[in-house]
Length: 388
Image (cartoon, rainbow, N blue to C red; front, side, top):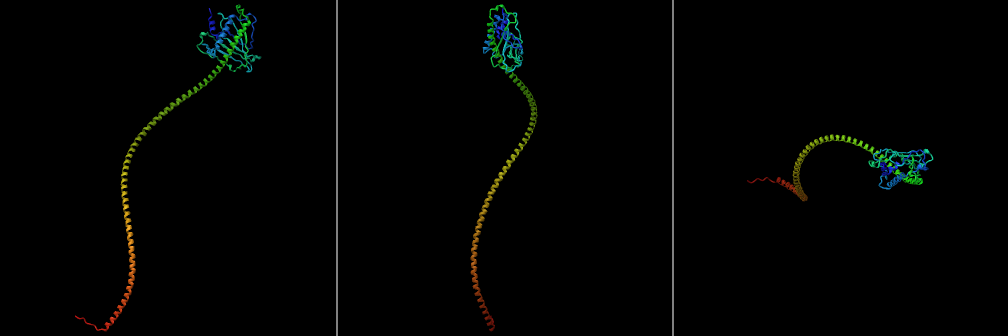
């Protein structure tokens, strides 16, 4: 019969590796311990199980579609605080050295898998107080059949402040057992098993470091997303408050708008009545204006006719006056000619009168002389009697 725990661990390489890696937290440096007796040797079944787990893990890491490629670990019903990383202070110039202490035990039905495996990263330094330890602890491991119900992201506290190594990490390996091993695996050499275990652990450690880098990158992205989500949440709360305020303002504005609309409608009705009255008055005035314009046009035609008559009369009078003036001028000219002729006649008559006066004077003097002679003669004669 195969143990269900062994079956589940063989199906899940990562779970098998974490179950077999029982990492201890030590304050000082861990040096690679060389097995000196048969109790420190790795048994055949255990070495084969570790090798199989590491090979499966490498295959899963090399697969592009693997669930471990993005370090998106599926822990089902595991708690969010299933992993915890503790970071101690360390100067930035110190290069961290990975030291792995592995205590393996043969897998059997009587052995229970510990629920809190620990992985320690301890930098190599001469000063023990400047060591920094990164510990990963998981409080609960479930079988592979329970995985897939939910995703959990490894939370890292202070891990972003670590100094990146600038050279290849030195891996110190301590391989041993906490209890005596089985005598059936004594045929394996300690050197070959140590070399195989070291090679497998180097490959696993390189993949673990790569996953940790990716985990750190994803953690930073997660922190950025968390900060962005906080900002967005604050912004959303602010916008929600503004929306509520705007809604209240809108309701107040709507009520005031309705009141103003009712007032404006009443004013519009009153203005419409006034407009109808004004329109009726405009129509009346328009009709009166048309009638007055008609009368004005008739009067204008009459005045134009009278004006034409007056112009004709004026032209006739002017023509008659001109003719009269011309006739008067002709008469004046004729009279002037007559006056000139009469003046000449008067001159001639005056000349004749003068000549006649001279003759008259001579005649008068002659007559006076004759009368005087007659008077003298009568005085001398006798009066004669008339004959009957």
